[in-house]
Length: 178
Image (tube, rainbow, N blue to C red):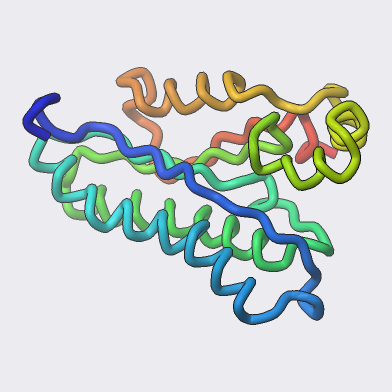
């Protein structure tokens, strides 16, 4: 706060993915995924709002997932946590607007991106096969790169998005258009 003159942008970008259907997922896994993917976002928002407001406003960006919009049969905990992030974002946006805070809150919904969250699949199939398998599901024919998401986050953090709050930025190569 002292070094940069206050907090103006928060990006909640922690996430873990554990596979499993609703029948296969044990309660400990369910709670672990929700603790990181949802509780972490809640706590980040809860404690950043006062600092961002004191600094004169800014932007909160919550990284959700395309899995928060379109679910899969084998990712029950991840799907529900990311869907909850989607709605928590809207709740935070409405709260800040109602309070008269100059704080925007939006969510980002990427599909498969070449990050560590894909490592278990890469370890099981090898990078080439894993990425090709995922790319076949995406109309653009490739998985995302970290910069694909970073540029969307940069937009939401910037003043150019000053009239966006409670919105969803979908960065998915067209998978949600199917």
